[in-house]
Amino acid sequence: MAVRQEYLDRAMPRYLGVPVDTTAPAWTTAHGDLHWANLTGPALAVLDWEGWGTAPAGYDAALLHAHSLLVPDTAAEVRRRLGHVLDTPAGRFAELVAVTELLQAAARGDNPDLEEPLWRRLSGITG
Image (cartoon, rainbow, N blue to C red; front, side, top):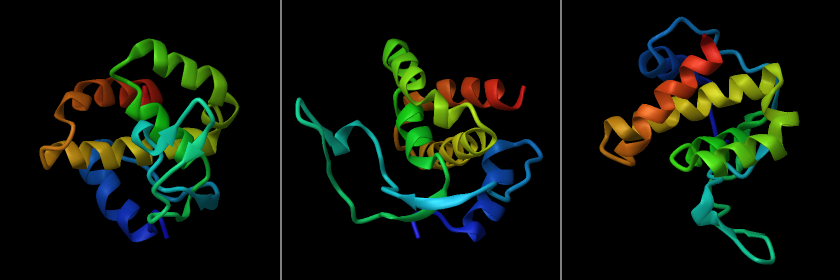
């Protein structure tokens, strides 16, 4: 599994700081670690499949969008192209999962520069 329900139950309330239903609307197969370092171009190839498994539907799109937040034009383009996934109840839930994971990573010292944009995105999802 790329994401486990037990993790959602424990981590979402802790790192999001808001009451949230931790039940995913749907689960599907996912890469599990989709960010820019795992994509190549100009011919698209997706690397690093060691974390693939089951995750909330929309998780890969949500994770790629969250990893793009430091570059607003890129985040807007990801959202434009993947909005059909992200702008659904499952997609919004997947964004909460991605934000949870990245806020937890920031708390450990990984990608601390993402913390502020993640809080802004959380406000956009829950606000």
